[in-house]
Amino acid sequence: MAAIRQLLHKSGQEVLKAFAIAIRARDWYSRQRPEGQLLGKHRSQFYSAVWREAAAEVGANVELLHDDVFEIRLGQALTRTRQTATAADDPVTLDVAANKPLVYRLLSKRGLRIPNYCEFTLGSIGQAIAYTKQFAGEWVVKPANGAAGRGATTGVVTAFDLVRAAIAAAAYDSNLLVEQQAQGDVYRLLYLNGKLLDAVQRSSPSVLADGRSSIRKLIQLENQARLKSGPLGGQTLIRRDLDLHRTLAKQGLSLCSVPKRGTVVTLKTVINENSAADNVSATGKLCHSIIEDGAAAADAIGVRLAGVDVITRDPRVPLEQSGGIILEVNTTPGYHYHYHRRDRGIAVAIPILSSLLLQATEKLGSSGEPGGAKPPDAVIYRATP
Ligand SMILES: Nc1ncnc2c1ncn2[C@@H]1O[C@H](COP(=O)(O)OP(=O)(O)O)[C@@H](O)[C@H]1O
Ligand SMILES: [Mg+2]
Image 1 (tube, protein in one colour):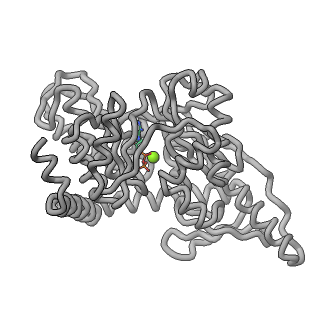
Image 2 (cartoon, protein in one colour):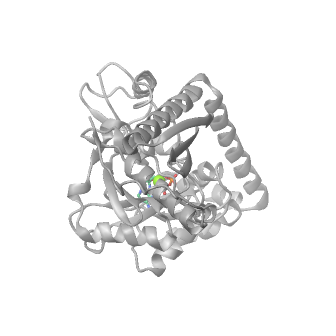
């Protein structure tokens, strides 16, 4: 406790910041390595195939303008895409949605369920420690404006845990959040203009023990397999961070452990780095109330193309009943877990492109230009194998 008290002083905070900078530097370095470059290449190839396929399906012409920037035309309607970036949402909406505390305020105003949370910085970490003392249970610490699970740590209980997790989060943003950890699975609900396009249940990343290899080795093998699997499977790797160490420790394991053959080892509680095998379609599992809450969340933030994340123990009952929450309203959501998962995927880019072209057509009409293109069919679905 004396050590924690020392960290709350000015000189202690400078030490915390130095640790955070070191974590950020390590992350930057790993992205420059060949594996990081290969991930980027896979992502680029995946979205190139996705937009080309969608354009072919709606009968549009596609031209690669630069790197990942595609210009897609149908008649006079024109839209541009760059991987997940589209014209669906304006830049201010993207900024609002990226600000987690602001999103929570807007969701709460709508009466939607969110976790109890407290905003803080490394300079006010004492307030965060005091806040967590008010409620029992586990906490999550994360950057207030983070993405892809970077710097998020679950299972925070003690003041020491919180300080360590805050350092990890501060590597990505100086504004931090500590919030109550919700129990249950994470569901991604993809909405387009308020309509649910698809839902995916996303489980934690895991590895299957072979009885000979350490967990460190199993992670290495899993990452190698992902990179080898190309654009569909190789878009994220498992990074060794605090959430990994805490999740393993909860199971009485460390990177050096050699679990018995056949043991499924959960690697992280933060789900973002899971694989296609950890994702499964959930559209049929969700009750009407959760689907409505997700649509209301997207509407509260003003997002047209929204990946709403929900955590619940039971998707068949309303969130009030299960104690579930709305976690996030993501803009420019990823597509790979809709296309490629344990069961049949859905080519979500097709209805998205239809809508983008319709939006472009309406713009042409409103600007009074002659001969606007015929609007494409509103929504076309095609399931991928
Ligand atoms: N309050 C929470 N309760 C349980 N899990 C959480 C909570 N907050 C974050 N997580 C886990 O961490 C992941 C990343 O957090 P999230 O808020 O979605 O940030 P990011 O923008 O980095 O994806 C989530 O998908 C979930 O697995
Ligand atoms: Mg998220």
